[in-house]
Length: 378
Image 1: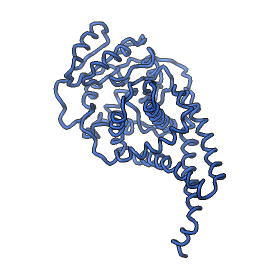
Image 2: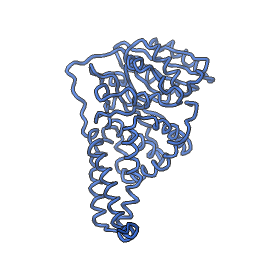
Image 3: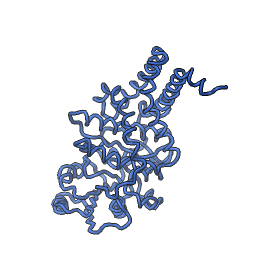
């Protein structure tokens, strides 16, 4: 058999088969993973229990964000015992004095001042470890200094997700809605990431959480010896820890809108690109199964539209558009329910364009997987 000649004579058919395979992979992810979040309903609890909670925020030169966001954490409507720990990590701005003033008004605020850098432990892991070790209570609730709770019931909603067997709760950290295409791209990528990590958790294979809105038990942190497994990596205080500690039985998600946090998005393309590259440098350390599933999805997303165009032009546009239409309708159903669930429904009319963008996005940021992480967390 003359294989080169066979390929030359049937390249249009090969392109079409490649498109069918990529479309089938995409449809698998939507029907096996993403549909779980679309139709997820929070189980009703027979017994409601309020837990003592330690909220922890790490801050470095965050005076503006402390002024803007910390009061939203301090005025939470939560009648049970709780504390708010702010770890002020070697700040050079006026953060120390702002925190001291806030402590005069809010007795639940505890301040930890760090004045020395931790050698050989880059990033946020050292100040966060100090905060967790200093916490009084078993339930730890994490957020960032540039985040504010979406409601005054954030603490109540996040701790309410705990069942007796639950050790980790994955929340949603949204970005503020602003005009402009960059804001839509940032929010779509954030929504799309949540669609994945929440759906994977519902499928019994949790792989990450976001430090903007994440809760776990203090005992889990100590059982896994904190962040010692990857202290040399600047990032990973959220996703790598969850990748290591989360299981099908000990992890739950929280889609209650009262549990969301809201962050200020990047103001320009350069800032956002640097932020995303920093985040992607940790994904290479995920478990093998998670790297495979995430890579296969990104690979299929990147190839889907180029192969669709080639199949339409060089093979049979009617069949190709038929396959596209099935995937489109499936996407619309899932995105309609999930954008509504995560309060991102204003993005739905643009999802067909944003879906094309995701293929370009994966291509742009794929180089970050091979770069050495930056050694700072600010």
